[in-house]
Amino acid sequence: MDKIESFKVDHTRLGRGLYVSRKDEREGVCVTTFDLRFREPNKEPVMDTPAIHTIEHIGATYLRNSKRKDDVVYFGPMGCRTGFYLVMFGDLRSRDVLALVKDMLKFTVGFDGEIPGASAAECGNYLEQNLPMAKYYAKQYLFSLENEERLDY
Image (cartoon, rainbow, N blue to C red; front, side):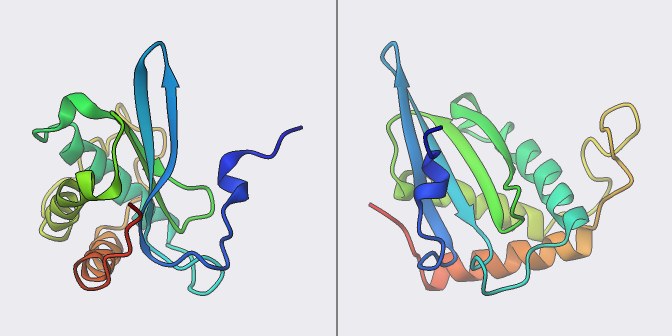
Protein backbone atom coordinates (compact mmCIF):
# COMPACT_ATOMS: atom_id res chain seq x y z
CA MET A 1 0.00 0.00 0.00
CA ASP A 2 1.05 3.59 -0.61
CA LYS A 3 1.90 5.70 2.42
CA ILE A 4 -0.77 8.34 3.02
CA GLU A 5 0.23 12.02 2.94
CA SER A 6 -0.17 12.68 6.67
CA PHE A 7 2.32 9.91 7.47
CA LYS A 8 4.90 11.54 5.21
CA VAL A 9 5.09 14.61 7.48
CA ASP A 10 8.08 14.50 9.84
CA HIS A 11 6.29 14.87 13.17
CA THR A 12 9.61 15.26 15.01
CA ARG A 13 9.97 18.69 13.36
CA LEU A 14 6.34 19.76 13.66
CA GLY A 15 5.40 22.32 16.28
CA ARG A 16 2.21 24.10 17.18
CA GLY A 17 0.90 26.01 14.23
CA LEU A 18 -1.45 26.23 11.28
CA TYR A 19 -0.30 24.27 8.27
CA VAL A 20 -1.60 23.20 4.89
CA SER A 21 -1.79 19.44 5.20
CA ARG A 22 -2.83 18.73 1.62
CA LYS A 23 -4.67 20.02 -1.41
CA ASP A 24 -6.94 17.89 -3.54
CA GLU A 25 -8.46 18.84 -6.85
CA ARG A 26 -11.18 17.09 -8.80
CA GLU A 27 -13.17 18.32 -11.75
CA GLY A 28 -11.78 21.82 -11.28
CA VAL A 29 -12.66 22.07 -7.59
CA CYS A 30 -9.83 22.45 -5.08
CA VAL A 31 -10.18 21.43 -1.45
CA THR A 32 -7.51 22.43 1.07
CA THR A 33 -6.98 20.52 4.32
CA PHE A 34 -5.44 22.46 7.18
CA ASP A 35 -3.60 21.01 10.14
CA LEU A 36 -4.51 22.99 13.25
CA ARG A 37 -1.73 21.66 15.44
CA PHE A 38 -2.64 22.52 19.04
CA ARG A 39 0.07 20.38 20.68
CA GLU A 40 3.66 19.55 19.71
CA PRO A 41 3.62 15.92 18.58
CA ASN A 42 5.51 13.51 20.80
CA LYS A 43 6.71 16.36 23.05
CA GLU A 44 3.60 17.57 24.87
CA PRO A 45 0.83 15.50 26.42
CA VAL A 46 -2.06 14.92 24.05
CA MET A 47 -5.36 16.72 24.58
CA ASP A 48 -8.06 15.35 26.84
CA THR A 49 -10.69 13.52 24.76
CA PRO A 50 -13.74 15.25 26.32
CA ALA A 51 -12.12 18.66 25.68
CA ILE A 52 -11.44 17.70 22.06
CA HIS A 53 -15.08 16.71 21.73
CA THR A 54 -16.17 20.08 23.12
CA ILE A 55 -13.85 22.01 20.78
CA GLU A 56 -15.26 19.99 17.90
CA HIS A 57 -18.85 20.90 18.80
CA ILE A 58 -18.18 24.58 19.47
CA GLY A 59 -15.69 25.00 16.62
CA ALA A 60 -17.86 23.31 14.01
CA THR A 61 -20.87 25.36 15.11
CA TYR A 62 -18.87 28.58 14.88
CA LEU A 63 -17.39 27.75 11.47
CA ARG A 64 -20.74 26.70 10.01
CA ASN A 65 -22.23 30.02 11.11
CA SER A 66 -19.32 32.24 10.08
CA LYS A 67 -19.01 34.47 7.03
CA ARG A 68 -16.99 31.63 5.43
CA LYS A 69 -19.60 28.95 6.18
CA ASP A 70 -20.08 28.06 2.50
CA ASP A 71 -16.35 27.32 2.19
CA VAL A 72 -16.22 24.93 5.17
CA VAL A 73 -16.31 21.24 4.29
CA TYR A 74 -15.28 19.68 7.60
CA PHE A 75 -13.82 20.41 11.04
CA GLY A 76 -12.81 17.57 13.32
CA PRO A 77 -10.13 16.09 15.56
CA MET A 78 -7.00 14.19 14.64
CA GLY A 79 -6.82 10.65 15.93
CA CYS A 80 -3.49 11.40 17.62
CA ARG A 81 -5.23 14.05 19.76
CA THR A 82 -2.71 16.78 18.98
CA GLY A 83 -5.01 18.95 16.87
CA PHE A 84 -7.78 19.26 14.33
CA TYR A 85 -8.33 19.21 10.59
CA LEU A 86 -10.17 22.02 8.86
CA VAL A 87 -11.16 21.23 5.28
CA MET A 88 -12.24 24.11 3.05
CA PHE A 89 -13.12 24.70 -0.57
CA GLY A 90 -10.46 26.68 -2.43
CA ASP A 91 -6.77 26.71 -3.25
CA LEU A 92 -5.81 28.31 0.06
CA ARG A 93 -2.80 29.06 2.22
CA SER A 94 -2.66 29.17 6.01
CA ARG A 95 -2.78 32.94 6.13
CA ASP A 96 -6.06 32.80 4.16
CA VAL A 97 -7.78 31.15 7.14
CA LEU A 98 -5.71 32.51 10.03
CA ALA A 99 -8.27 35.17 11.02
CA LEU A 100 -11.11 32.64 10.81
CA VAL A 101 -9.26 30.16 13.03
CA LYS A 102 -8.37 32.87 15.56
CA ASP A 103 -12.00 34.01 15.66
CA MET A 104 -13.12 30.41 16.23
CA LEU A 105 -10.65 30.11 19.11
CA LYS A 106 -11.78 33.40 20.66
CA PHE A 107 -15.38 32.22 20.39
CA THR A 108 -14.44 28.97 22.14
CA VAL A 109 -12.52 30.73 24.91
CA GLY A 110 -15.46 33.06 25.57
CA PHE A 111 -18.16 30.43 25.23
CA ASP A 112 -20.64 29.97 28.07
CA GLY A 113 -23.86 28.03 28.15
CA GLU A 114 -25.06 24.78 26.69
CA ILE A 115 -22.57 23.13 24.35
CA PRO A 116 -24.11 23.00 20.86
CA GLY A 117 -25.27 19.55 19.85
CA ALA A 118 -24.64 18.04 23.28
CA SER A 119 -27.83 16.06 23.68
CA ALA A 120 -28.66 12.39 23.23
CA ALA A 121 -30.67 13.17 20.10
CA GLU A 122 -27.82 15.16 18.47
CA CYS A 123 -24.64 13.31 19.48
CA GLY A 124 -23.56 9.71 19.92
CA ASN A 125 -21.53 10.49 23.05
CA TYR A 126 -23.06 13.71 24.31
CA LEU A 127 -22.04 13.32 27.97
CA GLU A 128 -18.31 13.34 27.20
CA GLN A 129 -17.63 17.08 27.22
CA ASN A 130 -15.14 19.27 29.09
CA LEU A 131 -15.68 22.99 28.52
CA PRO A 132 -13.04 24.27 30.98
CA MET A 133 -10.30 22.18 29.34
CA ALA A 134 -11.57 23.07 25.85
CA LYS A 135 -11.19 26.74 26.75
CA TYR A 136 -7.70 26.08 28.14
CA TYR A 137 -6.51 24.36 24.94
CA ALA A 138 -8.13 26.98 22.72
CA LYS A 139 -6.54 29.81 24.71
CA GLN A 140 -3.13 28.14 24.61
CA TYR A 141 -3.32 27.56 20.85
CA LEU A 142 -4.59 31.09 20.22
CA PHE A 143 -1.65 32.48 22.20
CA SER A 144 0.69 30.36 20.10
CA LEU A 145 -0.81 31.60 16.82
CA GLU A 146 -0.74 35.22 17.94
CA ASN A 147 2.85 35.09 19.20
CA GLU A 148 4.64 32.46 17.16
CA GLU A 149 2.57 32.29 13.98
CA ARG A 150 4.03 29.11 12.61
CA LEU A 151 2.41 29.15 9.24
CA ASP A 152 3.37 27.61 5.98
CA TYR A 153 3.19 29.67 2.84
